[in-house]
Length: 373
Image (cartoon, rainbow, N blue to C red; front, side):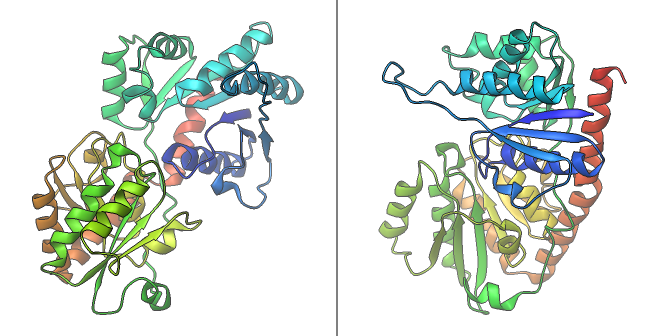
């Protein structure tokens, strides 16, 4: 098959999954063309039968905001025509699915089939904004195929947008050959001495990630367990989080890492992942931690409950319940046997339910179904 994939190029879950999916499909012999405004972080190096196409957006005084949606539609139409693509896989409804459908209209309606994958923000935030609701609903209804990364997200989308379309659930995945526990005392020593536990949080620092909660949880853990906190990522809440760290006097115990190319290296030496989000449509960071044998403590919300088994691979608590999350964190960090047991179960979950091979194959079969092959 000749496939186009439109995605964001950032460290966020959708961009990671789209890039890894493209690489997986190319290794199965398909021709893959990835389209975005920047080279995705997971596409460093060359992959046979896979090409990246840059979308350039001009800047004109007439436009208050750069018209990326239009530039993307034009570029997509150009690539479809030049490479005879059969299918476009858009990750997110806005702007990617709308741009793909506009490209199809430019080509006279005889263009490729369009599959839209829902990742969460397009349903919980952007899609519910009155400014975008009807456009989002139209994009979903006009897609030839719809997928969602969790049972929770699929059911939520159907209700909020009154969808009659069938939504196929293909969960996010992890490359278990890369995300695995490693003995790397030199790397671990960069962040925590041997007698202290290493707690990690990874996110885009958006408000719904509740990164300040991570710091408050850590502060309570410190009263019982010698530990260090590693905050990986950057975003709108970075300055506020730094302020909380300073206010609590934790500057010597908390390390900020802006961007990390190999998250698996960090997770492979961690003792615990904290993910106290207000909402998680899936929770890719939690899955990657589990694949590395790292227990997870997080919020009992959305798709995260499909990834983390409470009491078996980690513990979940209500959003904002800092005391409960701190309790579970101490419970794990004080008991090495329990931590090892939870980590082993997390690894089993990653291997049995969320392997890269399984999900890539599911997408391949779904593409064939939509194309009638």
